[in-house]
Image (cartoon, rainbow, N blue to C red):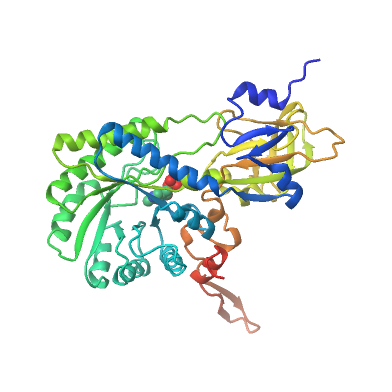
Length: 468
Ligand SMILES: Cc1ncc(COP(=O)(O)O)c(C=O)c1O
């Protein structure tokens, strides 16, 4: 009888082996690392970070941009910034800095992180540090203090008009600034215009009214970011065109403007069938900018990117054991894994994000359709579809198998730790608020008491590996 193995399924559906994934003795190899070896050594569940991938991604993006610049005769520079919020851990920041990238921050605690990184001697005061996000006073104050302390590469990017007042008040000498222009959302989205940034129609007037005559500020950067990422769609090209048009108009009245920051959003592989023509996209982005600048007879800008997911996403993986199979009716089989999917890959539960899912062993077994069940009691702690297929197929586990089936979710290195609160960290390092308990005493009076102070940056930086 012909056996239809899991290996056959993958081999016939995709190009396999492919970068980062191979099979040796029937077991999966991830970036050359035999996962069985790690499972035998550490047991499951395990979270893995394959650090060399970070450098590979940085080099690859630089090559893409530099190759395209050369082909097109694009004279502006290319500057790679790493968006810290996608993964704040010290080992990631250390690794990206080894590859000479610049940084982008998004919250007040991020500036404390920058201070630590400086104290450790990993950066000097010339590093470009782009500050994004809506800025409460504390964040803007810490940015101003960095500037006052001689960090020459700091570029606060104004999210709104009011933010400028902070730097007017706190920055002692002068500084570079940027403006984030708000993009319109994709047509099927719930809002029309992004809440982040200043409305396109207001930017020029704002510059004329409040920045142009102010000796303290030099407008250096126009920032724009499409939340849904870099895509070959009419929507993306339309938004980029609007931003470039604004850049050209601004440049004509603002000689200090030299940088166009196109944000993050470079996609990563979330399926073995993933297809994205990186070369084409990068070339077309630069081509669009270059053509507009030539038409308007202005020099083309330096291009800054803030790739988060692209830098760190493909370095991460999670390995689980299948503890048991549960057949709940004639058609549905559940593979129960030894951790919660909500807790480890929260994007899969909250925004339907998919990751590469592959078994580590049993590739020679036949396969079946399954649902993967997480350990929490939550009804929605499951995973049962992939990017290329609205179902999940995995090897059949023999009834009396000696070893369990091991499953890996791959390319999980961006955002999942922060969103799931790993160890107590938070998305964008926004601290947990102070907690007040309210109770009734024995006389029936309502009493309140402070149960816990607001989380401190020291606490978070300790978890992230910055405090010894
Ligand atoms: C301003 C800004 N830059 C960069 C990024 C990074 O995006 P990605 O991780 O998709 O590259 C984000 C993500 O939200 C962002 O808001």
